[in-house]
Length: 160
Image (cartoon, one colour):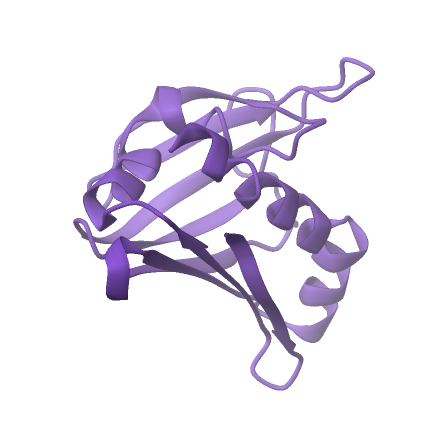
């Protein structure tokens, strides 16, 4: 099933990717909770992720890098804001330097993940990214965020 909808709202400064999976909600939650499972899908297919730190408690964080086809390694971070296992989480997501620290003068975004049980054992996952400004939204979309996240989420079915 995978990605069923992508919505961008420049007035609300959001992009929401909705996907559906033929798996129970607790199984889909494990894809966020377990760093080894997370790194199997978080990066787009051509930029697989490596998770170097993973603390999914409010105030904790996740550090990772993605390895590109030419060996480049862009780093990213999450600062965990909320966890409601297995229904979802919220975190600040941004670019990081090689040590995992947020890159100065680079905008971040807030990502809210909502998992909900649907009929017939299906779990719906909505990933809403909220940007601080129109310019930040345009920057991330120009960098390929929509294609990257859609490609990343599309890898989940194979893991379930």
